[in-house]
Length: 234
Image 1 (cartoon, one colour):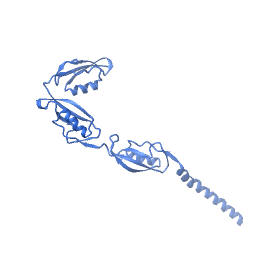
Image 2 (cartoon, one colour):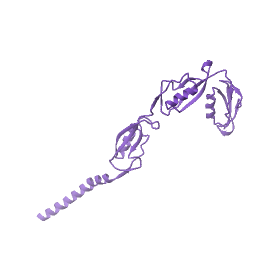
Image 3 (tube, helix red, strand yellow):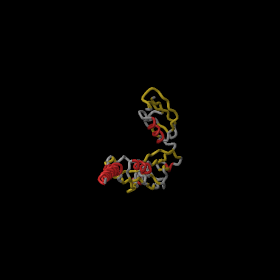
Image 4 (cartoon, helix red, strand yellow):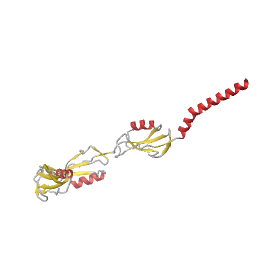
């Protein structure tokens, strides 16, 4: 009877041990040895990344924050380990978060000539700029910076575009630029740059949204605020 009891005890103990190993220890062992590919996290918000990584049984820690003109503030710039690298489930991923684009204080260039304004902006590293002719009544403002957008004294994101308005007398005559062959959007920017007014756009058979004909014709003398008519393809 004692031997039977001992045998039963061994069987029950073995069954219990096997149960514990199979249902409790094995999942832990398998999970510990299981690997997963680091997901692509760049441009993802920290909140979204937190939820996403948790669903993959991965942890995270913010290891650094940097300025970035490419990635919006509060979003992920990169991770360590990087995307597509295999790591163990339960591992911690280090995240670098964007502080947004670095801001640059705009120098005062209003009243400067175009050349002097360019020199000043170069010294500040502001190279993404566009110049637009701006009709003025005062002769002494001719060829000078009348205003900027953003305005002088404000700040601009590193790599951001600065629009500079150069004064030119309203009565000054200049030659009509050649718009033929340009896409409509480009031609509109060119018309704005010269202080002219796009009064009419007609469409005819041709390459879609490409200027086929213009009035006044290229090379004709015009003044500020003259009307321009375009014929574009459809």
